[in-house]
Length: 87
Image 1 (cartoon, rainbow, N blue to C red):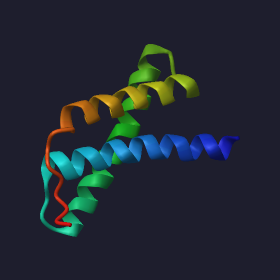
Image 2: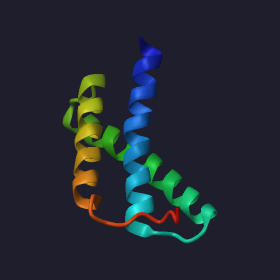
Image 3: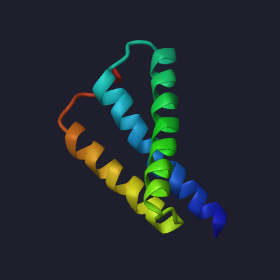
Image 4: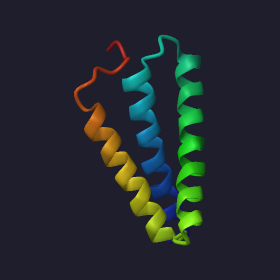
């Protein structure tokens, strides 16, 4: 069960970082996109854990819900923006 939660958390944070880095920033190169993705990914992990830790609510369920809210907000604000892939 712990592995499933680990994969779920990484998918939520990874999809949010992917949406923001490839819809908002639109870097032309692959290396720039990967760097932006990794910076956004790790910054969301650190910021969400620090925010919940400072408020005294750092539990796994709260962490999943908080990152899910961030992902839904990122999707809501970037849903009409074009992506940077030329397919």
